[in-house]
Length: 313
Image (cartoon, rainbow, N blue to C red; front, side, top):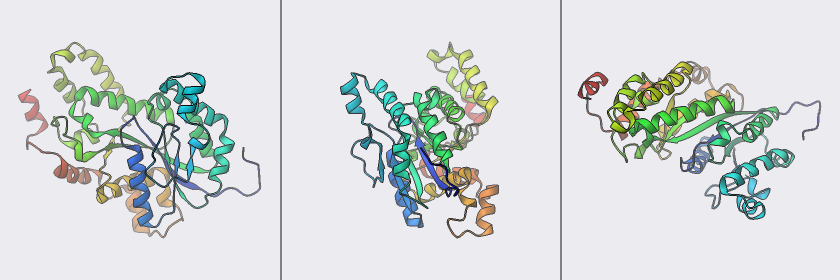
């Protein structure tokens, strides 16, 4: 562990990229690394997933040098879920190894590519404890939580996404940015019932419940869905930023949200003028107008209001 010295370590900023399997975490890390490099930031990507093979980006620190899922499954006869839990507990028990690796990089911006097992971020404490230790090492991190945007096309799945996102936000205890990834595929599995801003801003979910009740299978679970929606709305914490990694404007919007969350925009690592800082502070770019531009690009709109769509239902 860290030795106490008279010199306080300098602030190091970064992102911990989390989310369910297949949500695009590794692709996001690769895209964000290239994007930040073009902006002039020195970037370090840390692979925290012991099951991650064939990493496409330049990886400075790889947790598989310490432990791999394949070795744990073979040696302890565990399945993939139990093996991954053991791996993260092993990393937590050997944080001195991680500290020595990270010490090599000063004045860098960090991207932590994390495992995709959902329970690691909803009720298991190993990853949470690792993040807490990083904070003690003077890391200022934002949790970037990716979920597939096409879940918006299915009301039941979207309610599940909201519950998972809220549970993750409360458990991880970091500044948090929820991302709807793969925006170019948002309507691959069906049309959206409402405008995109309904989903990104998590507006009145009673409209979504009424839409869900139109399905005979879910009609009998209306009361349960109603209570789940009430929990999400009572906390009023969950919102989303749409993202297409291949779209520069989309990446800029995500980066602004992340930099504002972890305080990077108020630091002294880059040349910043007062106008840029105030823009980040008060949100002068207006997320709503940004969402409208994304909708125009990726979503086919019917031109009807929410009330008109509900009358049809």
